[in-house]
Length: 336
Image (cartoon, rainbow, N blue to C red; front, side, top):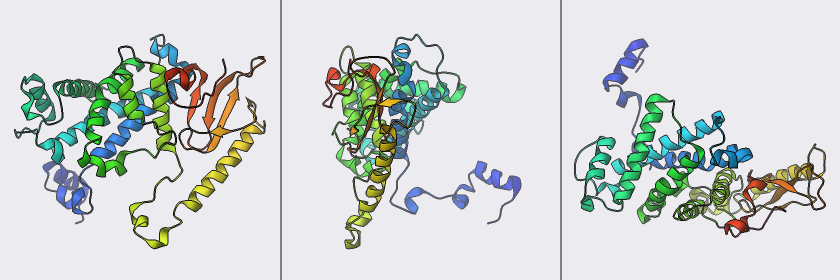
């Protein structure tokens, strides 16, 4: 149908043109809704927070910084909006949580308020009263963000909201057997060191006084896992074909070869900063691509300022301290 000018907009606004101009996702492929794509966006945004704040993490956590970079607001808004939208679609559309809804109220805000006031949670399957409070708090912040566009949480409070109140609900949802089939839409690639950043962040925030530097380590592991270019699994269509036995081998070989070239360039001293002599294994992608950068201070023992993987982009500054200090089972990288 060839629709010109205002008629096109009028048909969309009235609703009569929606079926004509668009389609339902499950009509064309085995795809129910975008809930788990939103979860991926939310997690990627939250995990990326340390990376843009790493140069002054202590100052931001102690609220000594008044000015935040624009990239912080970008990630904050994406994370808040996407986490809430994820919960909204899960509660509305997915069969597992759907059994907790007895009424026919399509207004997610009203529904959450109703559940929040309820003393009897027999209506709720796997969400507890605290979960409902948490989602309602997220809704309040999301509304302020969307409708005003002039509000942000401080770095440490944002960390607390997501780590202590949002991720525990996410973990409940993704760990259900019925939700495993959606992992391909949201989950990061396999992590070499086998650390699960979501689970470990949730566990850390259960402590009375959480270790924000440990949380930052875990965030960076999660961020780099999403950036990891190494193929760790074959797609389903290749597993079902005998012609795909070497899938990923050529691609990975090219990626690793190019990575080694970048690492050699870094170690050769052709740039203005000083590095150690040898690359180390990355705990995220597993490639020998971690380069240690030396701060230009006259120490008898080289003072490592930061480390960076030139494959998956994993990067941590010395301010976080060594992993062992935070009870993370990783090799130490820094000297103090």
